[in-house]
Amino acid sequence: MILTVLGIVALFGAPVRAADQDSPAGLSVTLKAKADQVHVGSAVVVEVTLKNTSGHELEVPSDSAGTDVDVQDENGHAVDEIQDGRVFRRGSNSIPQPDGSFILKGDRHGSKAMLVTMKPNETWKHEIVVSKLFDFRQPGKYTIQAKRSYSDANVNIFAKSNVVTVTVVP
Image (cartoon, rainbow, N blue to C red; front, side, top):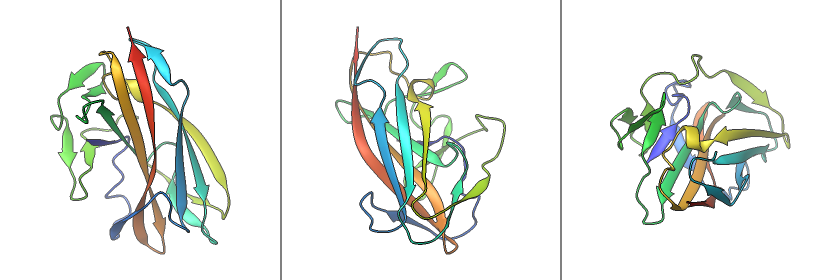
C-alpha cells in the first residue's frame, strides 16, 4: 500500500501521470536507508534525494510533502500504517486513489503542501522516519520505495524511487 505523507494529489488540480525512476527528464528520486539493519523498536529512517533532471524549472511540493511511501514485508504484504501512535490495518485510515495510492485521512503535520520551484540540476535532500508511519514491530526484511509528485507544464507527475531493504532484528 502506498501512503501519502501529506494529501497533495488534489492540490494541483491537473492531470496525473506516472514517471519511471529512470526517466531521462523530470525529477529523479533516490532513497538511501540510514541503516540496513535495525533492532525492533529502533527508528527506520530513509534519506530522500530529489534532483531536477529536466532542462527547466519544476513545481515541487516543499519538504517531504508529496512523498508517498510504500513499505512491504518480505512476503510482499503491505505493512500496517501508524498514525498518532495507533496501528491501522491496510486502508482503514486511508482513502484509495485511482492510481493505486492511498491518502491518509487527516493532515499529519497540521499544514498543507506548498509548491516551490526547483531549478534545473538542483538537488534537495530530506529524511523520512518511516517507522513513525509504518509498523516495524516484527523482525524481518522490509522493502521501502517512494514516489514523489511534481508538476511539469501543468501536468502532475509521480516519479518513483529505487527500492531499499531494511532488516529488523530482535
